[in-house]
Each structure stands twice: as structure tokens, then as C-alpha cells.
Length: 416
Image (cartoon, rainbow, N blue to C red):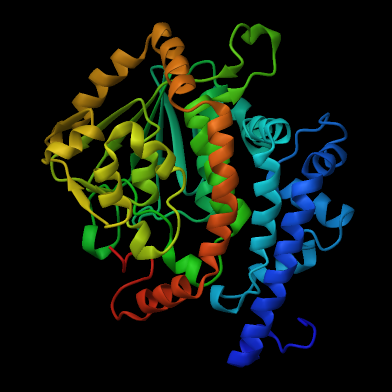
């Protein structure tokens, strides 16, 4: 059916309906297959769980072992080169695949643990970072001073909007902070912007780069899935300990502080939910415009309930409510609100509080009680499929087109 259709840019409405029907039938078949064989597939891909493979490696191996189960490498590359509106939506097959793996207590636990290993790039950069105390990763810089790793997001034109490159840089930066024995506490802050509207001001984050998403440059595996299973989860659990010297801990984890300047929108607000302390300027605000953008805000749906009641969570997620630092509700997200010029002083106090061995032990047990690994894995299983479907939904594509067409703005900031 797909072979009989023209290329996506040349399809009529009837062709598009035919293609969607073909993909739906295939995805339903994939789901039935994986419901029966997920553990067997994972066993074979990982050689009896002797290999700890990352998402992209698993998908590539699966395409070779079970043709048609997930996109082949040529298909994935072809898809990645197209604008979102012209893609086949092959990411949904990847969502089906990873939903089944993560649903399995056995395979899912192994996969989540595998994603807590440090990246190859971080291992390569670690000797230089240990000696110089600084690494410039493009979208993020990390600098060690007096036992503290200061991570600064540096996307000045896009208001620290995240894309594939930013996610990769953030994971490397988090890994370096966790691997370096000279670091005891991590701090994340947004850099100074060059964007005309906020020139000279610091901004924490404006969430996903909608311009890149519209142009098809945001990938399902390397952005949506890897972000949650990679650096965000490492902020929570740390890195999987690979040396006996780390005993009795199973992970190398450290406390984290976030400093919020101006705003934390979308993915930026999601990040605040995993930090041990959050300090914000009085002029800042947070929002999670999931309903307006049309997709799922990472693991915020899992974590918001711990910070606030269900009514406020729904107002944020479904109604797009914006919470300013001066509101009573902001106390559920910020530990301290100070005048912008006092943020550095407040951060120094917070770092001194966090720089304690007892803090690390207690945060580990807090996270274990609040978000058990199996609960996280079960949520990520559903997220994998739901996000893949949402990103390729016609309403999302239409919203992105409207954002992109607004004169005088970029899609990265139009919804703000």
C-alpha cells in the first residue's frame, strides 16, 4: 500500500489517508508481536543481557534482526531529512518497540539501567575536564569551582530552547559532573541571551525548539526518549556505578541546584521537578504549555503530583496556567525566591547546605520512595508510544505551522 503511494510531499488527501491506514495496520501488528516476544527480542539483541545497549543501538540491531519491526537505518535517515509534515511517521514503530521493552519488568529494568551509563564522549573528555576544570560542549559549558560543577546552558538566540544537540551536550555535561571526584554539587543555570527581546538577560529555558521540530530536526529517539531516560534521569539517580569501590551505593549521584532567571517554560519547567533545590528571581515564571503545543511534557505528568495537588497540575498541563514567582503556588516549585541581583548569594548558601554526605544518602532514599524505578519504567513505556503518536498527529503539525507562519517570530518562541 505504501509503495503504491507517491512520496509524502506529493500525496493527495486520499493518498495520505491510505498511507495512514497502512501504517496503522502495521503498527498494530508490531504491537501484537512485541506483546508476545518483547523479552525474547531483548534477550537476543543484548546477548542474554550481557550487553548494555543505548536506544539507537537497540533500534538499529532490531531493524536487522526483525525486518519491519522498526525503521531500518536508511529509512530513519531518509525520515530525519524531511520536515515534520512530510515524514511517514515511522517514529511510531519505534514507540511501539520501546513501549513493549519498557513495559517488561525484566527487560525494562535492564534498559533503564543501561541508560544510566556515562556517554562515550564524557569518558573521552573526562581526563581533560579533571585537569582543566572546564569543558565547552557548545550548547552547554561546565566549569568546576571549589567542588561545584556549574553547568550553563548557552543557546542565546533560541532562549535556551532544546534540540538534539542540546540534549547530547547536557547529558555529557551531567556525566562529567558526576564522574569527576572533585565535584560534590551540581548547579544549572541559563546563560545570557542575545535574542532581541531578552538581550543581556539570563534565561533558564524555553523548552523544546519548536522551529527545529517544525523542520523535522528533532528526533524521537535522540531527543524525546533519550532526554528523559538520559540526562534528566541521571539528575535523579546518577550514573550506574561500575566499580566495587562505589559500594554500598549502586549509583554515583550528587545533589543538584537550579537557578531560574526570567522563565522556565516547557522542558525547562520539567527540569525543576527533579532538582533538590530551586532558587528563582522575583521576576521569573514557569509554565508547561503541553496542551497548547499538542504533545506530552516529558515525565512532568509523573512528577507534578509530588509537588502540587491534582487541580493545579491540571491547570498547568491542560490549561496552560503560568505561575509567577510571587504567587503562593510558586512555593511548590521554588525553594527560595530572591531579587535577581541576589541570586548568586542565595545559590552560595544553598550549595553549602547541599554539600554534605548525608544529603546524598537522604536524596537517594527520597527518590526511591517518590519515584521507584519500576514506576518510572512503566511511565516511560506509555510515554514512548503516546509521544511518538502525538508528534505525528495532524493537530500538532497544524499548530506548528501556525507558530512558524507568525511574522516577526521564530517557531521556538512563538507559542510563548
